[in-house]
Amino acid sequence: MQLMTYSIEANVATIKLSSPPANALSSQVLQELASVLDILEDDSQVRVIVIQGEGRFFSAGADIKEFTTISSGEEFSKLAARGQELFERMEQFSKPIIASIHGAALGGGLELAMACHIRYVTETTKIGLPELQLGLVPGFAGTQRLPRLVGAAKAAEMLFTSDPITGKEAVQWGLANAAFPDEDELQAAVQKLASKIATKSPLALKKAIELLNYSKHEQFYQGVQKEAESFGDIFVSEDAKEGISAFIEKRQPQFIGK
View 1 (cartoon, one colour):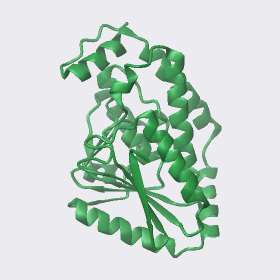
View 2 (cartoon, rainbow, N blue to C red):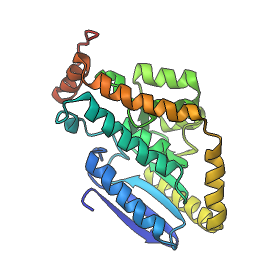
View 3 (cartoon, rainbow, N blue to C red):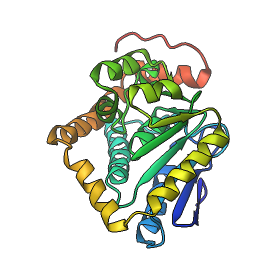
């Protein structure tokens, strides 16, 4: 593994995204995460998984520079579908996954966090889906999971404005379980939670996860498929090209609606 590490202690596995400063979710990161999950799923000693980021951020989002290497809408749709498949696997994973979020969880970083079963944050963590700021839309099921967690109105506000909320606000909105003053207290709380969950029966935990996901409607799966298609459609627009260029050039985009 080049872009992440993992360790196991007392039935708790900790996965660390290790491509600072942004811990961007490139195709390689997603592939490595899938490989680590394969290993941990087969390890009977692992009962709980924690995902965290190295350095300043949990994950500041997708790898925007990687987007510039893709030219067709079909390839963008395939990229979105691969990310969606991985995050769906996480949500239905046989072992509980806890996101330990500090610094920022933006765009794909928040979509990764929403695929985890539990989210602990620092009070000042920046959390949001800023894709519309770039002339894009979320592609890793963000438009489908966010309303389930915060409600349609709050999800619309976050998407339409691109403004991040704080970790403290995320708890109030139902997007996070608990917020802590700093990263040290966050990590201590996450480890305490993981250790408590690890004492439970692995069979019972697996069944509980299955039951929690049982309420998902077929409309969700239709929605993520539509999101992947839209992700590809929007990426070949003039506005998307302008938004990506503006991001890389660190300037405000000028959208024209084409």
